[in-house]
Structure formats: C-alpha cells, structure tokens
Image 1 (cartoon, rainbow, N blue to C red):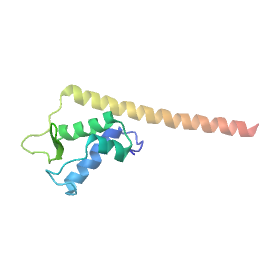
Image 2 (image 1 turned 45 degrees about the vertical axis):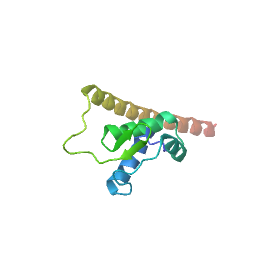
Image 3 (image 1 turned 180 degrees about the vertical axis):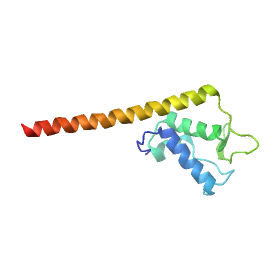
Image 4 (image 1 turned 90 degrees about the horizontal axis):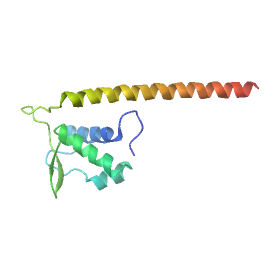
Length: 122
C-alpha cells in the first residue's frame, strides 16, 4: 500500500516504477504491471493506478499499446518531456497545498496535545 507521505499515491507508485526502470530491474521493453496488478500490489483504486501509468508515459518511462499494456522505456534525451506552463503552475500550487495541509496537521497535533494536558491537570 502506498504510504501517506504528503505525496500523492500515484506519484509514489510512479517513482518506484521509474527507479526500477532506471536501475535495470525492469529493463526497457519489459511489460509493466497492469492497472489491476498495481491496484492489488499497492492497495489503491483504479484511478490511482491509471494516473501512475499516465505519469510514467508523460515522463518518458512507459510506452502504452492499446490492448497489450504498458512497457518500460527510458526517456529520450532527444525528446525531453514537455509540460505546459499551466501544468507547472498547478503542480507548484498542489505542492504548496500539501505543505499547508502538513502544517495544519502539525498544528492539530499540538492543539490535541494541549487539550490532553489540560484534561490531565484537572
């Protein structure tokens, strides 16, 4: 199962698969796990599995063939991954939102601890 790290589950899964491809554990041309296999291996929904594979394609680590599946690939230096300015803005915004959520969670933990301490003093 993908851990809660403040980073989206599909990105965690995509990062693991990218590392396997870069390290040679999953060589270029080898079939990648299907959506169903990713769902089972990581305990995620079909949407999350689909997003992980989509991210691999976007980043040049997968080539998909309809009806056959997705296959490992290494990004081509001749064709760098291009992302729109809107995509970059959204990614940056989401990163900021994740940081805010982490700070809020930390603040909630502090407040809950304060309430516990006050309850013990009574």
